[in-house]
Image 1 (cartoon, rainbow, N blue to C red):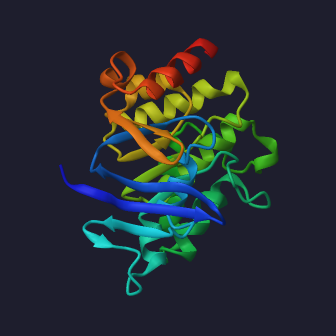
Image 2: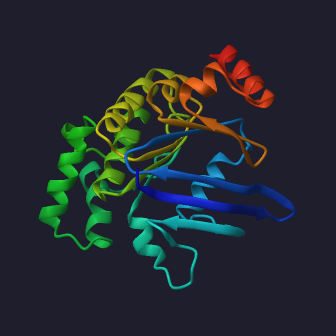
Length: 246
């Protein structure tokens, strides 16, 4: 399978604190990779480095074989290839649902309004939010906001979708509707990199699970390997603790 993103020897230092240490991993086309681990293990920072919301302190990030940290690389173009879904939705509160899904297409991809509308409607249907196109974010539930945020990211038609704990800000009864959409996207063959604390989702949907601990990748493998037969003591401890809570 073709590798879309390859992370090599990536590090990130905040002040005195090394948050990411010598990270190596990759995401191939059509693959769903879930990153799990305790709070503070570096999961979200890794995602934010991959889409350059944080500047890595060292190492390389290859996108289709090219190091995007080279000065000659166009960061803006690269960013359009990655869809990002945040914990807190990050919708534009003064725009309605349809406009939220059109604005990036028109401003960044330079699509016409007619084309942007067509694409936005296509993806709002995918997430089951097409009947809410005139609603403002404040009129929506958390689950609905997150589904709009997913549609907005999909409307840019990225190569890879990045999800940063997309259900952590939701009430428990709304988690299911967002995970259902994500399951359907995974089944459609979308390339996805998901930071999540939803162990059931990681177990059922991921092709590969990456366990991070204290800024390093402690273990990675298939869901079956990681959940049924982890090799590392700290993976076992994390799963025991997490699965007891659920």
